Length: 347
Image 1 (tube, one colour):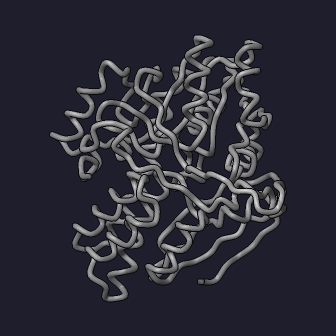
Image 2 (cartoon, rainbow, N blue to C red):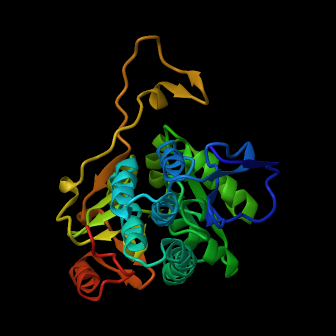
């Protein structure tokens, strides 16, 4: 693997770009090392970048879209056919809609590196626009429940669902965030809490199974989540545990809001049932913090995502506005006909 740079994480200071093009290599924040150390790692070849994606050194739908584009740029430098590079990248995280979108967009460009850098710049602009639209859903004094990580680390910068919280905070609104720890990889406890601490936003980490108690105690005003893919009918494929939150929110009469750029919307896949759910190493469930938490010989089931049906979604926040489920057909039609995001309608 490429060179790395490490700094002690003291809970203060800016959040660096998650991923960037460094001339002939990709530099990214190694999210496996957080929150203990803030370390960057570099990939000089497509295969090195694919290994970083598969090991979750980089994750989050928008960030993976940029990684897909930069992977094609690396492949071009190596003299590899771009269509071969797209196929290899698609295998790393097959549910991640943005990854394939970014790879295909770079592959169709005359200069994949230039296109990748353009996609990275656009990502920040989209996130800020998305956050501005979604801010209306987070009132002063709001208590927000989040899942996984949807902040800067899930994008190039700023964030999607967590970006909405950040925008509300920057506008002077008081916001408190309940941070789902998000087992088994603890993206909430490790990454979301780290971002919120550096941004100075009030938050508390809770075990995933505390969500129902918080809602029943009237301690939650809105559930804000991201998405790895939104299918044509509005079903949401997202980090495992999202469906549970949606059911609980519906039972308690709370808004369940999905924040994602239009590149995450997939008009070519009819429903969530048509998406093959990825599974990861069962060891992730059998351990915590590198330590065994189950008896020797125990088996585990480790799906990465679940599907939340459109019937449980209150609204979708995108960079082009807030959409209710009843309006989604129009959004999908526009994505297909107008090709938002230069390729968002591709399968």
